[in-house]
Length: 137
Image 1 (cartoon, rainbow, N blue to C red):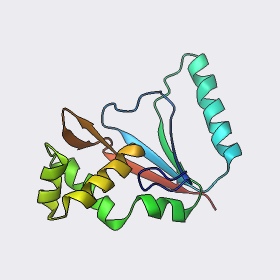
Image 2: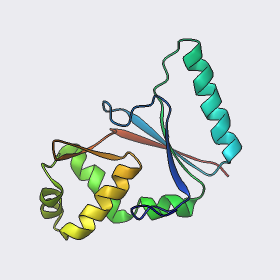
Image 3: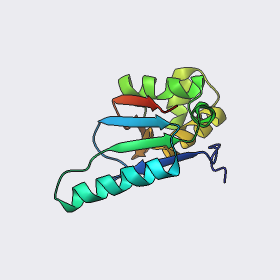
């Protein structure tokens, strides 16, 4: 399934059940298998059962191609800009970046879909202040 320009190889796992929360780190994993994902989920589940805090945010892609379809060069500009300058709307963001509204709207929707951007009261903001990447071979 291809939703909002996202390839089917992209999926988002957020182990604490929250989609929008305070600024923190987002871990991006490229590669691995469904078994790796299941093991990570079970580990988080067991930690939660023991009463340990589980606040990881993980965005996993099956391949480098999957990541590069979601995080294009132009899309990378959005969180970098928004980290320093939250914008009151998508149209304000498009103006600030000197880009067409339609294209910025598609890019914001794609990055929102995977949890890199969020909106509240119309304001477009980045949801993490760091992105860590793990590439599994």
